[in-house]
Amino acid sequence: MPVTVNLHHLERKDLHLCGDLAPQELDADGLDDLIRLNSPLHYDLMAERMDQNLVVQGNLELSIDCECVRCLKPFKSLIQLNSWAVCLPLAGEDGLVVENDLADLTPWIREDILLAFPRHPLCEMECSGMPAAPQQQARHGSGVSGRDDPFSPWAGLDKLKL
Image (cartoon, rainbow, N blue to C red):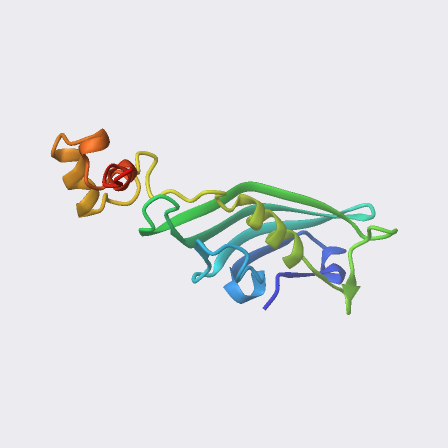
């Protein structure tokens, strides 16, 4: 269920919104092959009306499942947007769409969460990447290098009889 604010209730007092937003509501599937949403987004927000604007501020928290770009190891990461705030006009060209006195905040939450996704998720900063293949380890560990190396691209040229 989307995060909505009843504007009629805001006329009397500020509203406290607290709950969870299902991962499907964020519509982020397929945006990044290395990031998946399997947990709900937790929100704790205060909404108030100021003149012709809706001001919402609070905290957003989402646990994401990632794959490391270097070693492809799965890991979890936590996105926290503390002191998140948005000011939305209620009228005018950029005005908030209101249906039955309800304003949907989900698109603005979604946008800021997507901007907080890691660009290159790493399981740890010192991640060295994929382990070397046994063939490469033997080549580097034997002290063989250059033209004498049987895996060298030059080894095939040395076999040519010109």
